[in-house]
Image (cartoon, rainbow, N blue to C red; front, side, top):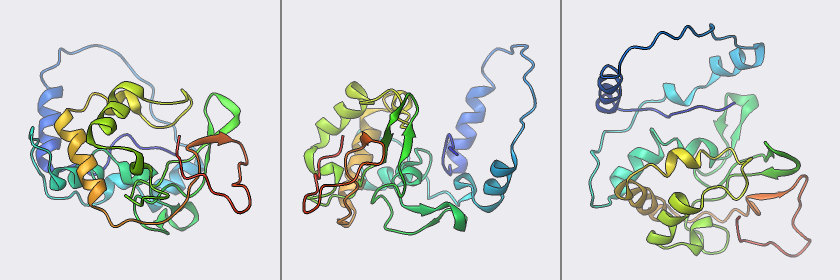
Length: 204
């Protein structure tokens, strides 16, 4: 179950509505949403869009931790995939926020592989940010994108963000307390397990 956007401030919601109202009208009847029982049950328990938005921090060419905090825990919804949660308990967080997903998902295009959002805290051994500086992080998002087209990460959306916003997200993630939590390669063979006595900390 995925969501397109996280909790947004009134300022951003107003801007989105204002923009949509500038678009020319197009006649395009669409079918009514049909949610299955599982989707209805899950949405009644937890929906990250119902979470209270953080205080709005306006965009700026100068990166800021506060702007990154607003984006990563708000509209960009980074926390949703990169935090271990328990779907049987209303998606309650069961580990440190941004320390990586709880369970791998099947690669959408290759049943022989699975993907797991990595630990984004600045732990030098198990955190994905250990191998990035600010510019390489921006390049990773904007130029490299998904290693696998079956990844659930919306790379095409994120690469449209401004450099200021991407750098702000990086600054915020770097400001988090390091959490030592090994999640393994981001994309790996289905059922992957680390070798006994060895843990490859390099996420893909």
